[in-house]
Image 1: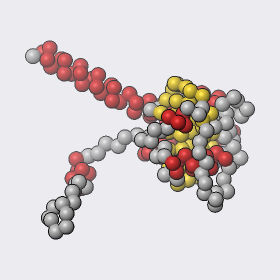
Image 2: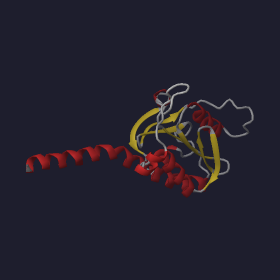
Image 3: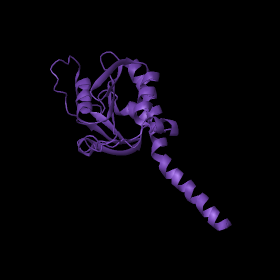
Image 4: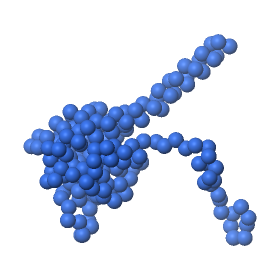
Length: 193
């Protein structure tokens, strides 16, 4: 009995560690991004980061220089440092780790955009995927995000952190919220559910 119970406890601990690993990497990546963006904003260093969600961004990642590194604040600031070899292009984050730098993004084709190249590329990426994009303007130092093609500008680092957490971290659903929105199936015309 003790062996069986001990085995189940050990199995649960291993499974919890595996299931929360990517989430904790992502939380760390968000914290490091906010820290780096605060300083890059202050110093007007342009930056463009793409956080992969459900849409596979392998084709975007393959356009850049591959990495498999935690996204530390210091690394991000060095990648985006003006005239650094990987300064141009985007950093793509997959599962809380930098997957590639200097990636080429699709430009938005909206004609009414009077934004710089980073913003046009960030909006274009967001229009073609479910990725979350974070931008620092080189001209103004303003921090922006783009989600589902919608640009939010002039954000504080704290607001950037809230947006990234809300968009990227899994939300736990309570039993009460599950009851409020039951899944209903359509049974055809005239049938009762």
